[in-house]
Length: 126
Image (tube, rainbow, N blue to C red; front, side, top):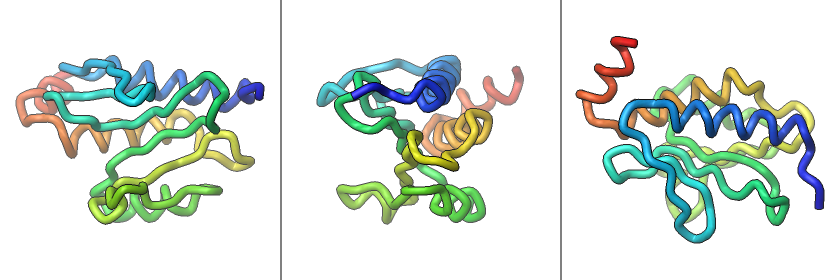
């Protein structure tokens, strides 16, 4: 199944943004793309090969951002109990999916929730 170009563009922008943050590594557990800081996942990016719908999962501790993310078409608390800790899965292929800029804001918020203070300070200094 072909991946919609607009969704792929947003996915790539969010991935590139995540990988540009201080101290980030990209890994592929379970064949899925994740971005980690300090050996901890801060964004699940899924796969971009068309085998599953494109989306990303981020940790949003800030109440307004969390609530906003859940209003996106098809968005839901993340599975495996992660939703209880503020993780939200946001599909990117649906009509009305969030803009790349908003996705990057959420990726940064998720990063800040997980990254050690010295790395968030490095980000703030940029």
